[in-house]
Structure formats: structure tokens, C-alpha cells
Amino acid sequence: MPTRDAVSELTVETVARMIDFSVLAPDHTFKDVDLACEEAVRYGFAAVCLAPYAVGYATRLLRGTGVAICGTVGIPLGHSGLLAKADEARTSVESGASEVDMVINIVAMKSGRYADVENEIVALRKMTTGLVMKVTLECCYLTDAEKARACKLAQEAGADFIKTDTGFGRGGATVRDVHLLSRVAAGKAEIEAAGGITRFKQVHDLMQAGASRVSTSEAVNIIKDFYKWETE
Image 1 (spheres, rainbow, N blue to C red):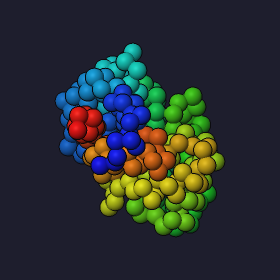
Image 2: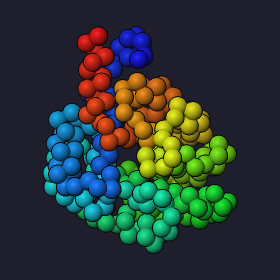
Image 3: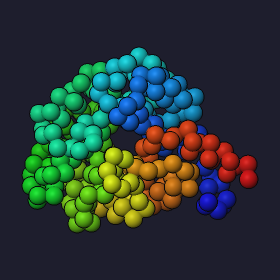
């Protein structure tokens, strides 16, 4: 675990406000959405991250609570193309999402078709004017050069957050990737870490590397882990 001095300035409230509670498992139900929304309000999480289908339902549960709703676009592969992504984004926005999280077109990125990657981000940025827009790179499939190029494309297109991974790929958030994206974004976009985050130590280390938000399905366990640290 990190040293006590390193986390002495943190409180459970400040940790919670850095966490997006992700409810995206393929077999999740609306009972899981109910529970996530209830716990997001109880602990004060920043947002609940959902598939477009569930956004309208969660909007009714979270209205007036201060917890944001983030609708996903292109989860998990990002391959669907601009028209499909636009439809997903529109569904979330019209259903009440205040944040939209899109996955870049990984096939286009790996193929060097950077204009196609950029065009999707620009189009969704226009659709989400006034809302928080996140762009997920799925770093586990990219070289360092591709990560840097994708981060720059997203930042220049006006993304509010550059996100490391979906959590569905072959790897998750790493301190090294957060360092790299933080350096490239240079304060012009915030960095969100996602994928495989289950413990408070990971959250702390990712924060130290430059992440200002983390996304996880283990949000409550991270808070409980932080409580244990406080009492040691």
C-alpha cells in the first residue's frame, strides 16, 4: 500500500469523486443498475457509466443527486463506424446523459487511417457540445506511438478526457500508459484510467501518474479498501 503520508490529504469523499462506477458487464441487469445508482449516491461517485439502453432508466433514478450519467459509444471494440456511433451517442444524449464515452476506431488506428479516427471524434464532439466527452483509446492494443497519436487526435478534437481502456480488452490501465497520455495531453485534456482497477493502491498510483478519474466495476470495494487503510 502507499505510505500514509502520500494519502494523508485524501478523504473518502475526494476518492469517491474520482470514481466512475461502470455497469457494463454483458450479463448485467437493471437490478445491477439500481444498485449502482443507489451506491453512487450513497458514496458520492462522480458518475455511473452505462450502455445507451440503460441511460434513460438511470436518469430517472439519479435526477437531482449530483451523480453524472455517462453513456458509452462503441463499447467494446470501436469498430462500428461513424453512423452507428452517432446513433449510440444520440440515444444517450437524448436520454439524459451528461457525459459520453466513445471508443476510437481501433481498426482505423492500427491501419494508419488517422483521418477516419479523427472524423469520428470530431463528429461526436459536435453532438455533445456542452457535455463531457471522453475518448477511450484501448491502449492495450496500441503501440506507444499509436497511443500518443490517438491521444493527440482526441485532445485536438476537444475531448475533455482521454481514457486508457474499456476493461474488455486484453489489458487494463497501467501507470506507464497514464504517464504517457498525461505527457501528450499536457493539461489540455484530463486522463481517465480504466480496466482491471480493483484496489485503492491502484487508484492512488494512477492518480500519482496523472489520472484525475478512474472507471471501475469495483467502485464500492475500492472505497472499502480505502476505509481499511484509514483505520490501519
